[in-house]
Image (cartoon, rainbow, N blue to C red; front, top):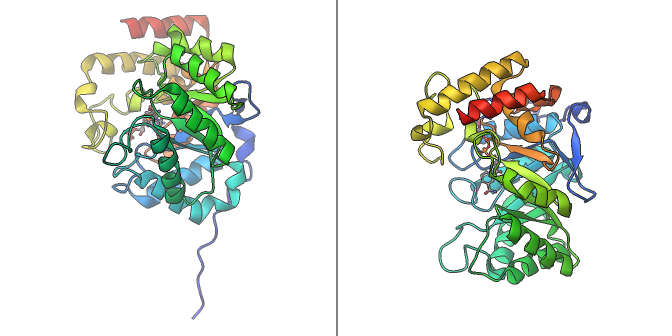
Amino acid sequence: MPMYITPAYQPDEKRYERMQYQRTGRSGLLLPRISLGLWHNFGGVDSFENGRAILRKAFDLGVTHFDLANNYGPPYGSAEETFGKAFQKDLKPFRDEMVISSKAGWDMWPGPYGDHGSRKYLMASLDQSLRRMGLDYVDIFYHHRPDPETPLEETMGALADIVRSGKALYAGISSYEPERTEKAADLLAERYVPLLIHQPVYSMFNRHVEAGLLSTLETRGIGCIVFSPLAQGLLTDRYLAGIPGDSRAARPQAYLGAGDVTPAVVEKVRKLNDLAKSRGQSMAQMAIAWVLRQPAVTSALVGASSPRQIEDTVHCLDRLDFGADELGLIDSILAG
Ligand code: NDP
């Protein structure tokens, strides 16, 4: 009987023709304008083959950056395991074409050493993440959230030592306010490790970074990758006709609930969707183009529950420009 061997994954040869890449702050690292996050849809509760297909599609589209954290799942750690399995099957030959990140900072394991910002937690967590993903190093390692109880010197000292150890190539922080960001950058610089990147939330529905963080990042030459730019799916056409059974808002273990899909939100998205249509875009495409209009924003960090979604999102690159009238209309719809 002949032996059948599953053909190895061959990425699209044209993958670097469509994607655009931007320098991360004043560093040498180029990131794709669209990066893929594995917070949802890659856990132990999700279909492995669907997650694998999303990763392959993303890489085919020139998405070279994949963002994880120790506690993505559920259960905690399982998104890194899913990624590790898919990496082993498909992407391993392309490791040097990929930028893979992980983080520690939120609750991960029981007891006093599995949360917040201690050196003990960050060092142990990164070792666990590397084991789960089957990697020798991550490209970017983040402190996932500010921890007012731990001296910033300790957290940044741990990040600097992690970079020096080679277990991460670059250091990042997430959800730090501007003042703490400046201090973190100074502490890392004292240790001869630049702060590569900041990961804040930013979307049409959450514009807090416009109040100071974006200008801080630009001035300091720190890159910026914005998470949940689709407001977890609210800024798409997903909820225009109710809450689909397979959507995030319908899932029991999500941070988006049916209560977030209010008539006022849907009404705004309906108006924004009309504008998107007039631009020849899907709602998701316009929402991503809108965050990318900020010069400080290096990359939009999106999620996807299907290969089709990441494909749709990446096509936002066909139209990134906005007229002043369009930006004014968006502001008035959001304020309405
Ligand atoms: P998004 O705002 O991009 O939401 C993604 C969701 O939007 C998808 O799951 C899908 O919803 C829907 N969607 C995506 N593309 C389309 C499309 N083209 N058309 C219609 N619907 C679409 O981001 P996430 O909230 O998923 O966050 C992205 C990443 O950011 C995370 O994976 C993680 O890496 C990072 N993150 C970081 C945080 C931090 O503290 N640093 C916190 C949160 C996220 P559906 O599932 O309903 O189909």
